[in-house]
Image (cartoon, rainbow, N blue to C red; front, side, top):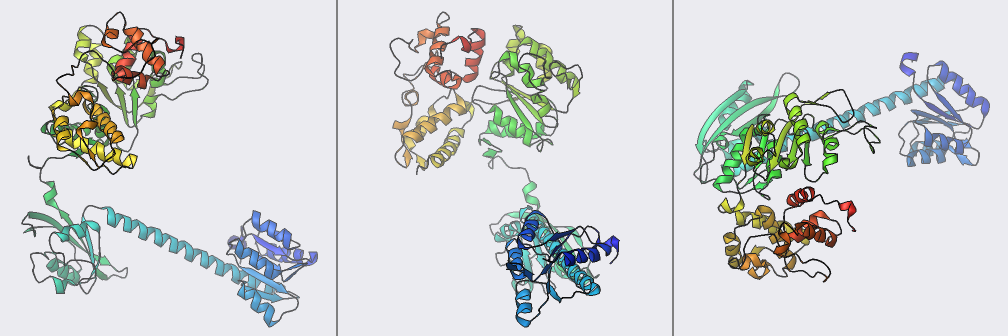
Length: 602
């Protein structure tokens, strides 16, 4: 071997004779091997093995109180697969047998001649290299096989492989599903000549025979036929020869695409789900179609609708329908962030730009670069933030707080609000130019009361979710409870429905949700007047204000909110539930009434 082929080959030499160790080192170094590490006993050798990697080990059979066989055992315990050459001064059949049995490549006899040492080392390293290349090739083949299997399983097109004798070697799941409705006899290990007497259900047999004979691919062959259920299907067929790598073929691969799935859905075949959105009503079909169309473009979108109608889910669907689906979707609840922190939260800040800015901060806009930025409750931001946001939408650049260099980003903006922004514009609370910038396209989410038939679809979904979450065997809703749920007007929309079902699931000790488990406003709608916010009956100490309608008059609203915050320990979400108002409403009132949580004794 030359230095070019032997460099960077670490070798461990273990021998208790110093002169022999150094002699071996000189021989090996001159041949170009290295680094050469020396060990004088078993313990030193074990230490080196634990801390370094070697491609060859040369060890004396006698190592003080231990033997080379002990070292061989330790090497195998450490799962090292490098070759080991044993050196012995007293060779015998038993010693050689033990060395080979425990994995030694070979053994050589003292006194060791230079050529013998180098020849044995060279052979050991060559075999080790071949073994590593074999393992690497096998791992590569296994990865490739696994990749093909995954691809084979996951594609929506039906795929079959057929050998030269017309046997079906493999089918993916899509193929099994397709032929389950066409010809169940078409399955793995079946022979086409045996099962395909009827050309109608084995439309690919003739094409397969042609390709096997000619070796010429057949592409985009469209076939029309009737399935077992009487459904008319149109299939696109592609038959390609499988190359054997030697200029010949050893079968074909068939790809079948069901073109009938491309036919638009008819009125009676509505979608009941769309990403995480649920609903089969006509108004929701329109929403789904709108999201599909709008998702393809990068225009700004304004989603409007009452609280609880699913604006966040609509945003997720828009993002997933866009080319940005593999990039971030960054959500910002404008009412959940204090006004003095919103600018930094959105645009980021430079270290030292204000008190508390201890380090540079990447804002939400930069986090969303290449993806989508969702601004929830956009109607509640201040005039200053409206201006900054308008400039960003116009120029697609922004300045982090305390920085004078602009940053350019590629972000699609989706905003949402449950307030009437047009009215906000008319009364001067919202900039008209920003309103039109945000509302390039608007998507209006209908309230639940206008979604005919969706209430029970959603109720069943929430019931399955909470029954599974709570580990309860609840599997249905009584007919009486269904009628009440369907008749209720749902001022809180889907969010209110979810809470009602969650409450019922908590209280249910049976397999069915009965009407008694529904709240009073649903059981007795004639007595329930959706007026000023109020809460269900709860025990409150005498020295605390009661959450009754009078507290929501202008002169006592602040007291009611403060009492709710104290009752909830400062938790704004709980306080909003106590007041029976939406969380965004609470945030807005906190700002309007200038209620500082830090000044409250909570």
